Image (tube, rainbow, N blue to C red; front, side, top):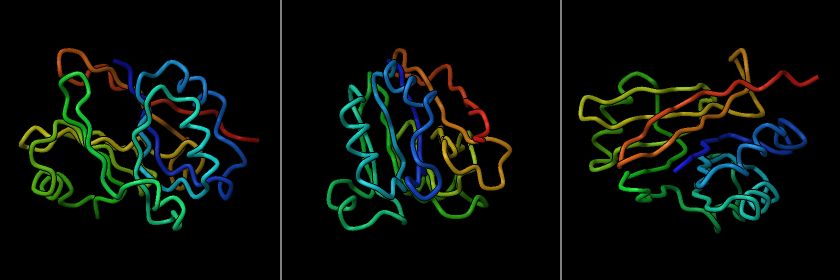
Length: 167
């Protein structure tokens, strides 16, 4: 099973549209995961129509319309993998411990908010992934998203994809 992980799209404030490379990756993904801060409902509508399956949450910049359509936390079992999605996890310091305590029983937690790519594993085995942002790199050298595979209930082949700089 192929996953596409994204977050913090912030459309149309940070970009006019999702990058073409990201939309191409949506077409080849079995599941698209968005960890919040969509900002506009048009992006949610677009991904709902293009993704085979979409798992998303709202973020701190998402207004009432998005909050009415998306949960704060989402859970799914995907090919034997227990996945959670949330926008904010707090400061980087102590993140693994906090998330392992807040989300016991998960194998993977996808989060956003910081726009900083993250891939660590808590001592209890919880994998924490932040795909960064495909539209707002902030202090990062590139805008990014992630892809991953699930095989035999395990996450494999996690890749961070750098997007070309916009003109």
